[in-house]
Amino acid sequence: MVDRRGAWLLLPAPLRRLPADLAATVAVTLLTLATVFVPVVNDTPLRVAFGIVFVLFLPGYAFIAALFPESGSEASDEHGLDATETTFNSDDGPRPVPGTEAAENASTVRPERDADPAGASGRSGIDGIERVALSFGLSIAVVPLIGLVLNFTPWGIRLVPVTTAVAGFTLGCVAVAARRRRELPESERFAVPYDQWIAAARRELFEPDDRVDATLTVLLVVSVLLAVGSVGYAVAVPPQGEQFTEFYLLTEDPDGELVADGYPETMERGETTELVVGIGNNEYRTATYTVVVQLQEVQVANNSTTVLDRTELDRFETTVPHNETHHRRHTLRPTRSGENLRVQYLLYMEEPPDDPTGENAYRELHLWMDVE
Image (cartoon, rainbow, N blue to C red; front, side, top):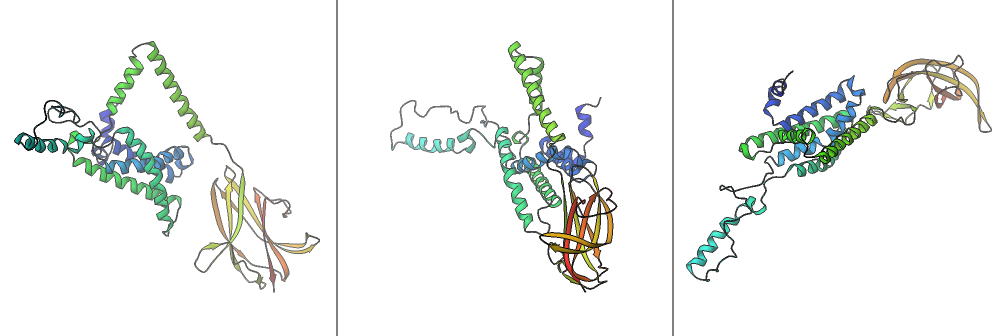
């Protein structure tokens, strides 16, 4: 079997030079990008699992690591005494008489003892619990700010720009944190005590103090496994929501943007205009759709519409994966003239019937126009 040192050497050299926690941050960020952009992996539950950590923890942790490169250990002086301790109590013994040489010496010595900022609090940096708490809080604050900035850019708040921006922010903070840690003495650098945690876990699991301690440890392990299993099952098998398909028509404005406006109202026979047919699949499966386009002469009376004659103008088929949207440009060309003609777009899943109508279609759209 490959030992831990051999496995560590398999990593790229830039990652090996990073502290373990920063290297893990980079690795999880890259794995998240893979689960988002790799075609096969982005449909698995791994995308959700890595995405939660990527959004709610990593940006804040990297930012905190850049701000506080030092460890949160207790500060002590060169004699091994805690910084909050003193070699004498200023309240013990007689006080020097004001105005004497002894009083002047005492007033000059005491400020030197209080000058150490670490001695005032007994602590430098922040500890592990504070880092974790601040990492969650700052991530919740930083990610929306990144989205707010992207909202005022041409890219907007979309999957690719947001993912790339958050990853860039995280990796940039990791680079700053690594540089700041290298500038500190090795004894003052922050390091996650993985070895201590592993040793403590082994003692609790395999060398308990008594039966009660062993029982509580087993119950804790079982509870954690049940919680992880429940969350994993919820991610892997999410409950299905409402199944539906979006079906709509768009036009293109002079700026090249797709809008739900500007539909043709008057055309000449044989004239062409271009529309965009949109299909959004929320059926929780890959679906094959068929669109039938008809030009109909109708009669409207007593709040009812009767089709007097219909002519099929076009028919096309497309396959759309779940949770994706397909846009198809369609050229509309009326083949007959008349007033108040109806152009109807009929959507079917799989094969349409021999006589496509609005009643047997899965979804239906229509436009009214006069054809001269």
